[in-house]
Image (cartoon, rainbow, N blue to C red; front, side):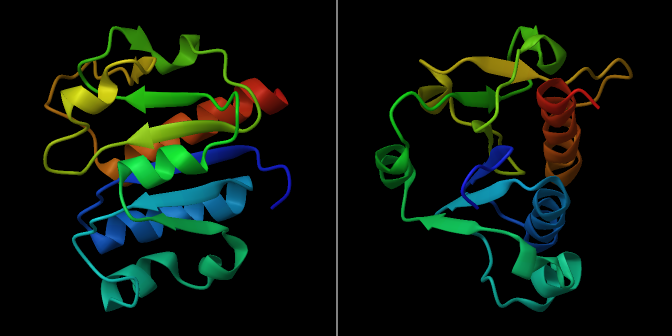
Length: 153
């Protein structure tokens, strides 16, 4: 994709089904998907294929060996937003722009603090409490809000 709406970035994702669902979200939004190794699954796993269905053909998928490789792939001026339950700012206040990168951590532990440092951090509201949202749900909520801000839906 030459001018993607967004980039959804999953740091060390663990569950194939979640990644498959995020890939479907990227397909319908016109977003690119970045996966940063190591993964807790293989892209040919049955659970991943079942979740992504036939949407994978519509997704530009980037695989990165590690965080450093991902950072090296970023164009000058790229904006990366770190999503974390520890953030102070809600995602609705971000002021997203076309081409922004939305970064999410692994399902079991979220983004490590060393990675969040130096990045603008955002959180999703959780008025009912709980530790965190499912990765695919969180990525979908954030990506659609970013799309709404960018495209004015």
